[in-house]
Image 1: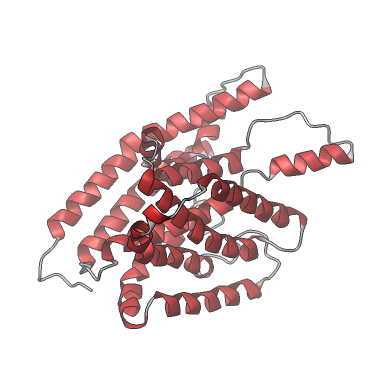
Image 2: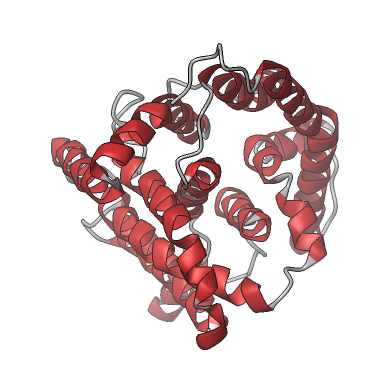
Length: 330
């Protein structure tokens, strides 16, 4: 999952900062088509949906066999590890002119949604043990449809404000919980199934590209298409799990994926700091390369100095607070 998280984070970076710049003549129809195809290759919002599914998977995975969830250590661990990096990123971003706001249109909309999912997960877990994930997922899709129909032509996924965006993305997150329930059955069948994993990966890329093209060149926007992309991601990740039953993930990508949160949180600060330092090169391609490299290095430093220590602190706090029978649990 860390490898996948790294590439999802990289997709967000390329979606926001652009990929390798090409000199395309847009004065003719052929150039416009090429520009349209190339410009939609990296859909950051589709990658965020992938993050949602993986997040639901990781949160529910330890509790898939009705393990007790102690509320105090659970909430302390979730909030400490997510909020310390956010606060630091906001403090760094303000003097650079990058406004990272939770309640407005910024990259933090997805983190606010994640926080809400963490908050309601104990209740969802209680309901799951009563009625199962399938019914909860069905109800959540009704909520998603309600949100979309409030503005069916809204272009972006976080178009419905902080009070409804999380409801729109809830089925995506719940699909991750459902995947966690299936993972052992998937693993048990791995010896009998041959997975053509690159077909699935290219299909995921193509699907995300279609979502981006429709967003900018049709009336069918992200709230509709990315809701379907989450369903595809659910089945795609099953194939990834099967694949890695037989193949070891690349160590370099697994390590890079541990800092995917930092990449997502800090990638907009990199170009701002790069501009502030007035680093210039003559070639447009080199300019892009140096800016991307600078940004990823900044993300790595942020991971070492902020994210990793906050994770360790959250773990220590959780260990001190659990498991004690006097604590409330589900």
